Length: 354
Image (cartoon, rainbow, N blue to C red; front, top):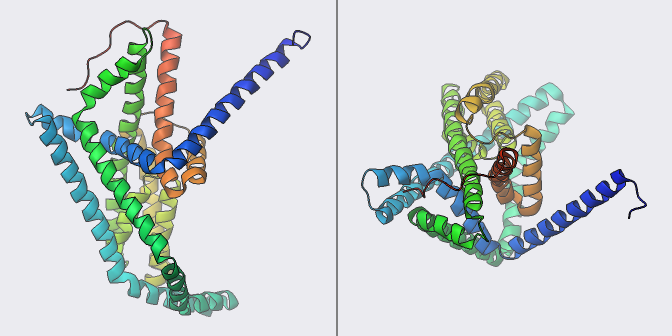
């Protein structure tokens, strides 16, 4: 090795480190995939705890016992999530036939203006029910597998909810557990890193939820004014899509514009596009800087790479989890860089959250 130039030796060392990190990451991903029924509820529970932590702390500060506060918080999240699911499903059921008829009418209008291309769209819309019937028949042949997946999903959701309750109630014990596991005199450093990672996830979840709510309200009001069918369901879709940065907003906005085009024509569709673009500009230039200015700031390229990697590893669930986990990673790196640049940290840290 000594016969090699210094730059080559450094490159070899960095390659070895990268290979080691990649190997450990690949093994970790495989283990998480094998143990997904346990890993996914833990990750979802951590995100839920980060989102609901402020509400729980406020209840505790008002004198509510920790277990009761955690239980009330979980009941509140079940009510909100259940209500959102009901709104989406009800809106889609009520307006599904109307939207399908509007799509056929829109396809005929396109056929009158664009000839062969529109005829193809008209044929697709006319055969939509047949295609859905064939898809339903294929799905029915796999009904046992589908029931198994639904059962597994429900079990993971219940487990995640129970973990949220325990995480909220026993957060001071978690801090003590982290300190007890720290080797040597690294307890303060490990606790500070864990706190910074959790604060990054908490800030991301809180900011994203507030931005998603504002986006959904603005787009829903715009679609209601334009009398686009299924406006409430489309607004709920915008709210859910906001948890997948960039891609979620693009997909949900495109769906809203397409529905407006199918039902209300080109002019209303252009107005709907204007509403979606205005909301996106408001989010990117006003809401993001104001609401998430205190959270970990990530470059859009890093966000898109994280979403792509998460989708390749765990599909839609991976897309939802990728960005908050990346935010936690950036928080850890920021804490380590701060400690490394400022020298040894003092031997005092704030006490556990009450």
